[in-house]
Image (cartoon, rainbow, N blue to C red):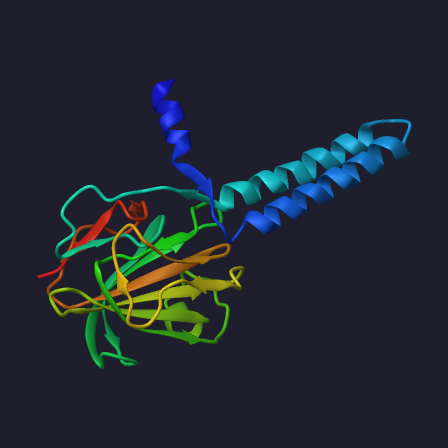
Length: 229
């Protein structure tokens, strides 16, 4: 029981969802009271409560935000920036910033995953750039370039540039980025938040040691996805 209580204390609600959860709960309560008082039978009330109570519980699950800390040496380590599943591990041409080949590792987040994003490396934010675009399904290859996305370039203490890309999906229509230009950043800190199903790409130098495989589940700020040279 003690371990369970300790684990529960590490779960909180992300600030992006507190207002939505609060006002939605008030609306459900208000409509529930009206239905309770307006009908002789309680059937409409219970149908409403079951349907919208379940929807609210799913929202609560979506906005959960575990308190996590990476246990280990962070030097040259790249941790997963998000919860989800590895959908891409490949060398690709990155022509927008690097204009050369990079190793891309992509994580797809389903609506059931935690949607907070963490910095994958220690370093300094070189720049943050938001690009409008389409809303293809996030797991499609073209989503990385054509979908609305936010790019965060991070320079590690060793001088290597790492690109992190938050990508909007077919349902995800809001990308929140907390990273700021010229600010120091660290593993364990939140990079941002993406609403509903979405994806995060990490572009790494060639020669980086890959520590994950296709289809592998990841835990943000915990799973080591690569090690830099």
